[in-house]
Length: 267
Image (tube, helix red, strand yellow):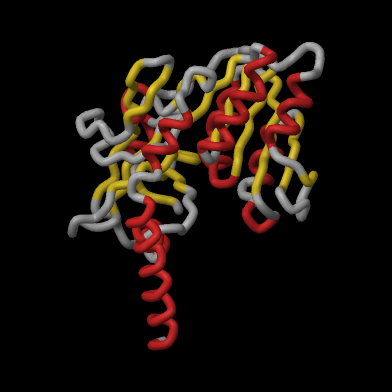
């Protein structure tokens, strides 16, 4: 989705995100990473998967319509420097926030290898965009319908076993994927950055909903992150907190499908 937001487009840096509210009538506020931006046209690009009530409402927006609220750019930008060899790992929709980071890493002179993973071919996104950035592109799918039948961690381990090993790894995707990417690189001593997508409300550090434990200390993803040292993140605690509203989310998801089916019958 391309959104007119000239001030955000001018100011955003790789790794930052926005808080989106579709409607003002008690609408949920959700964090979405900025997948791309065009300061000249004053637009930002958001890529999301339609899974719950808010993303269904967002997907139903038509060209020319507006959002109730769009707050950003938020979070700390990714630390970009010339590391040498950077491996970028994206799982599922995590490829979208990985895109500007891979772009920025390449722009400062890094050699960039990109591993993209998804459950199946139809869930792969931005393959052509990543191909234009990568010195080496590796595509894996759970069912083997595109690229190699494997998990991203398998390909990541093989790259870490090369001599010399990567200088830095950036992994973005589902929490369980990021956890095992960090565990894959840990024995090799490879610096590993992960971008966390926790529950957020205000996005300014006041509500505490996004808190995580990093290196034994409490951190707030919206202001201290979203990027952290993957070897220091308590992923188990984070995933437990993410499940806090699972029943409500499942009920809303089911209701969305019922409403969509009813709309089809009326149509």
